[in-house]
Length: 343
Image 1 (cartoon, rainbow, N blue to C red):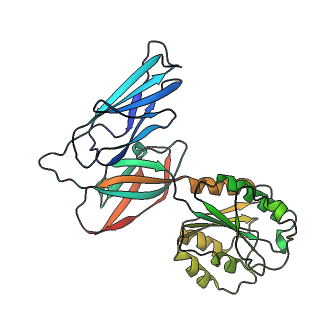
Image 2: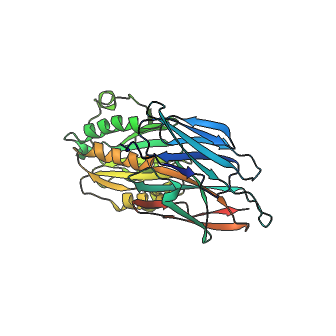
Image 3: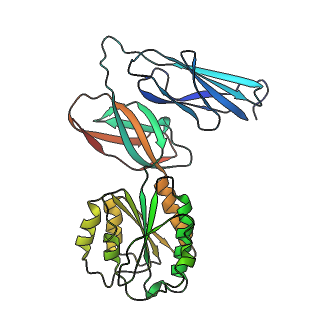
């Protein structure tokens, strides 16, 4: 708790002092004030919005006129007994500047113990540093295809544990997501839609492990032009697929499918390693006892996607390279968009 004679700190996350503010932009601050009641945001003295819970931010549209703006955040705390304020001033367009309004969105996967902010990252376009306008902790809605091995080797409770893990994992999906289940042994079953509360363990209690393993056929069956996360759970290699490795990889690598695999045991296959590498997924080892935590980890990783937004100051057409790197410790960039074409 802050001492009675110390003022709480109020720090702007977005925008920064001296930045240019144009179009839709998030206004955000952090504060160490205890028991925050609300944060009022003002633009040039006019109330722009109120945030009542962390992260303390509101959206504001500055329009297309680039002018000097004074932005103030007023923090009310301790039952509205205390207030602290902070202000920043944005920059206007000078006589020697041209205005560029190319907003670039960069999908990023990052691992960090804290919520990622603009201060945590550096973005360069064609080797030139850019000003980050927003970092959104989000990922677009997607389809989740759970591809589950039900061959004979998935006995001894492994199939039941896997279905229970998927039941729990469905709670991690977000609004707009959809999911399906593909069971396979030597034959690949048709995908069946599933949703929260599916209770797969009960619904599939008559499904018993049997037969061989058509792993490549099963993974290739869910290749989709839509954004899809294929989560494959198996304990062994491929024995009965009709598709060869190259054909199966080609089917999924040219789509929006991202393949993740959880191996129950140590029987990694070259195919699953290549499928994950080609599409940006992961391969994880687990056991009957740990398949639930392994699947939670995969979903946590998928849900830790960020979108970094910056305003490009380039005027050149053609391919523009993007490089995203940590600006301070505690942040690991897993991968990020590598560039885009500007027309």
